[in-house]
Image 1 (tube, rainbow, N blue to C red):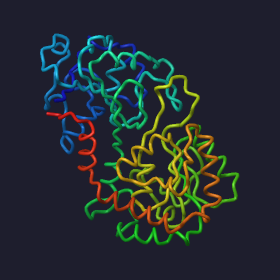
Image 2 (cartoon, rainbow, N blue to C red):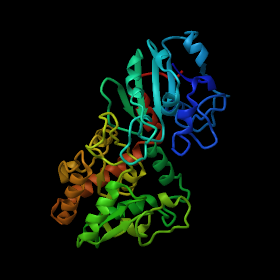
Image 3 (tube, rainbow, N blue to C red):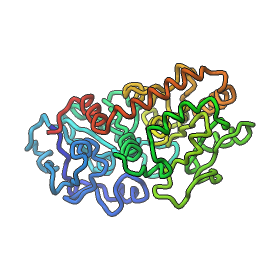
Image 4 (cartoon, rainbow, N blue to C red):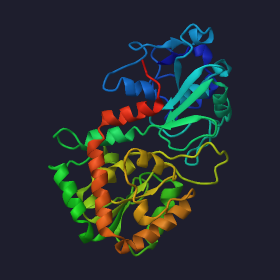
Length: 382
């Protein structure tokens, strides 16, 4: 079984905790200890209690005191968030115990440096070496990249968020407020591919190294497309005042563009100072084109392809070749080359893959997605 741990303040390094205040590790106003502790990043508990409001007041847990004294079933896996793991004063108590370290919304293990983030004061490489003290350690996060010696199991929560918002039981689609018939639009959008006037849509969000590079390369090119983002120029047809602006998708971005560029959250690079902190999350930036019947090219770590394949999706590698490299500059060079020569690729095969991905998106319900993860975890929650 799996139980979250109820930590007390005495177990927490308050200096480390103070450094997390401006980072997305703990829900604002919450703490990593006490009966009202933040449970947002408890991935396995989030899955088990999906659709229900839960906290440590209304689900089973084990206290840290009982863990230290072994006053619990020692075959149990102890669920600890990456934030809790980082701020613990001492982790040597994990020796001989089973633990699951989780981060529901993010790709990182706090303590490892991150290419896109200011991690000054937040680097502590013992977060990895201390995992190896456990009898068995499972690391769960939105990241398909592995760490040597640790069983890493990716969970991509933005899939269920994307699916639940786009396929909304006949109600108005929150990300597609213009869409009255989602299924018919996707069918028509796939058929429209050979006749689209623009080459690409690239929604970049806020400024990051890999997005700056792509923006520069596309701006210099002669190709027409929809290009911009919050930290860049405004994208034509955007609706800044719309609900969930960062999720909004304009019809024109789909209907008029041949390829969707999925410029993911994290920056794939070979220049990071520690081998265990590579990122390969899969967010709504990739699930949107899959849901909408679009060909897509990804700026991401190539490890993300393993997750897409395991979930039954086709990443177009068979058409465009292995264009994703472990450095974003090489990946972007390859993407620009593909875009410039897009009309030379097999349009019929691209449409077939779009149709396959759309069908798989319909078929793989949010419940099935969660079950797929739990089957791979091979540990019953209760």
